[in-house]
Amino acid sequence: MRAEIDGAGQMHGPSVASVDRRQMLGWTAGGAALAGLSSPAFALWQAAERYPALRAYIGDYVSTRRLPGAIAAIGFGDAALDSVAAGTIAFDSTRAVDSDTLWRLYSMTKPITGMAAMLLIDEGKLRLDQPISDILPAFARMQVLTSADAPIDQTVAAEHAITIRHLLTHTAGLGYTIIQRGPIKAAYEAAGIVPAQVSRLSIPGISNAVPAPSLEAFADRLATLPLVYQPGARWSYSISLDLLGRIIEVVSGQPFDAFLKARIFDPLGMVSTSFRVSEGQADRLSSNYAPFGGALIPIDPATTSIYRDAPAFPFGGAGLVSSARDYDRFLNMLANHGELGGERILSSEAAHIAMSNLLPANIGTEGTLASGDGFGAGGRVTRADSPNGGGIYGWGGAAGTIAFVDPNRKIRFGGFANYMPAESYDFQRHVAEVFLEDMTQR
Image (cartoon, rainbow, N blue to C red):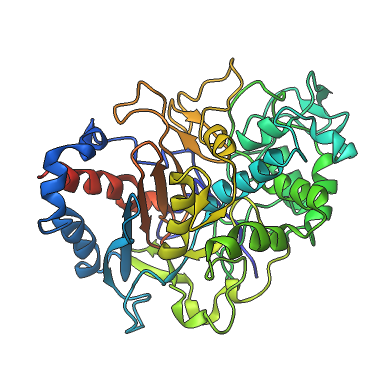
């Protein structure tokens, strides 16, 4: 049996309850730490023992059995990937966590889908402010609920067309089963408009709705349901990156997952990133856990993981599995303004636009998961007045992962663990802050 959840997922022990909207990312904290990374003190730090705070932080999680294992992956400029890891891929495994361990990314899939759309914009096959009804005509005359919890037949006409920009920035007015309540949530679940997969198990508090059988069916069914908000009116976390996956496959003429492989994963050497874990890679997959009665229980054991089967469709918002090494290659491409190892994925201009604030001018993010920052192509972007400076781009996932790239300073960071909900521990919220602490100790 399948259960679905995504980005801001929340579960509570001893039983698992529904999700909430708590803060998901912690990488904007840390004062002006990043600003000092070009200083002489940083050069001295590079020659000294690295990451003592990170080693202690991750080691404590493992030694106290709050996690079986975790890793932080760090990249500076053109230097080789560095990492701090501890523990094993599962409590019942002796295989050590390393840079090639496989993790469920959940919403860290969104930046990849966002960049795939930017690739098509770069090639002139899409436009940022193009109505999506040009590609999917069923979205031409959308209805909007009179309130977020209204019956689905209480609607008014949409005042504006949904655009590609809206989908990239969660401003299309679409809903999300992990956010919405009431009739629209029930309608989404009945139609299979669900964000991802979690487990074969039936888990209390997590929907067992059956996903739509394909991205085409997903989009067609979504078009028949009302929007939750007027397009372009507000930031609201949503299913929009999944819908963008359907647009990508229509415009490109390739299945969405095949497009990602051909245009991003293969050129970047991301050999361990996919929507399904193959038999040849299954021994590197970590187990996913949830707190239950003061302990962690496996909700998706690696040996029987739901990710060993093909998903109903490739979830562009939350479906990928990847390694710290692979995801760093994606971040490194962004740090290099669209290019890595001679392979150009995006033009420098397109990469810059993708990691800039793409929100419509009238929309802020105060009080949302984006917490007052801007939003780019599928990921949060710090503003110029942020303590760490502007242009830092990234996002996190429902199972404790987090990653960001600072293309101005060419710094990449990823924190990887698999436990749900991410808010159960402070790992996702604080692991990047601990990294910044290490940066300021020298």
